[in-house]
Image (cartoon, rainbow, N blue to C red):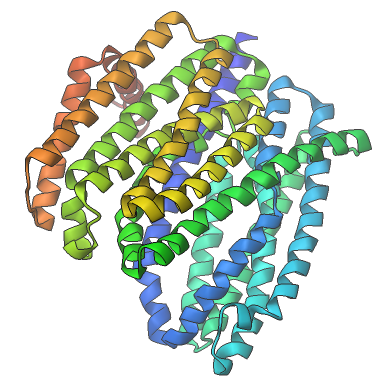
Length: 520
């Protein structure tokens, strides 16, 4: 029995590691696409046409609102049922999820085609490009809708911890789609190159996801069954997730409009460019729990209390260290990064930068802890908290931007994150059965990171320094060493986790050496 549990535990670890690996691969691919492929668009395509295409892309994003988060809910339900070894629940959940996903797929096509008749007017597209843009939009619509449908099947695969094969197939499709884009651009397809690439990507991912899902169901002898009462209860949760997605999308896409209206168009560029690097890098910290979404519900479903306590403590402390490291770096070096990257005229100011960094620190902690409660099955409460935060943000944004300008916009973003910090830590602490000693450790690590952040804020106000790219790299390296030395010196928990990591690495390294050099 113990051997079987160990095998399951190892499966969860491998699934998490592979998922984290491929999430970071995706991050690199996205970064490369933004640097290398976009210049090709502008080389082989009229700039006005590309601008019109980008405008229609926003409409495609809004079409995705019809999805209330089926894939995410299904991932939690299936993984949890696998942990419980509840085959009946598996069959009912998968059947209900697929049926809802198909209905939403049809709905997205209908809504998209309806909007396509007005897309030219909505995006104010020049008449000479309008016909081609509308046709390309309709082609890309199928790709977007196929991708939405594929997400449901992909999350079924992830729930079975097949993250390695899933990652290989998914990113193979993405790389292939990029190649299709380049080839079609060179062949003078213009904007249709982007549309057909989207169609190819969505369809290829859907085909692989459906095929592998069928294989998994047959291998595990899972019988799909439909029960209206279960379907009804399963569907009710989407009232909350849909509302949450709607308000989150509204909040995420309204701030730049308000800034442009009340502060000015130049302020839009300042805000966007100042927070973009922070958003990208903080996304790496968020991958800590995103990578564990397939395995965490399985752990809670199996009700392995001691393992849950150990895993949650590890996630929480690593999250504090990682976000603290990222935020302190941006407090110290954002001014120099912005100046070297786009020019000092886009620097948001030291005080505003500190508010921005503090917001992302709290948001990252709240977001990752919310992923833990989501894995426990608290989907409704998570959705309600997300809705509350989005509504408060939009209200404060209107009020503060008029009164306090850019600082008001940033404070409007910071204050609602306190809702997350007030709710999720207490929730996770109780549900994960953490001890008083665990609480003391968390308080110690939080205070330690808080003191380091305060020290970096003091340095940012006390010293003014102008660094070139080379100087930025050198001082960033020095900062990294100092931060790690402080953690090693002042955190017993950090030293313990470091010893565990070194031990695991040593064992793995010895195994590799013995495999490659058996005579030694």
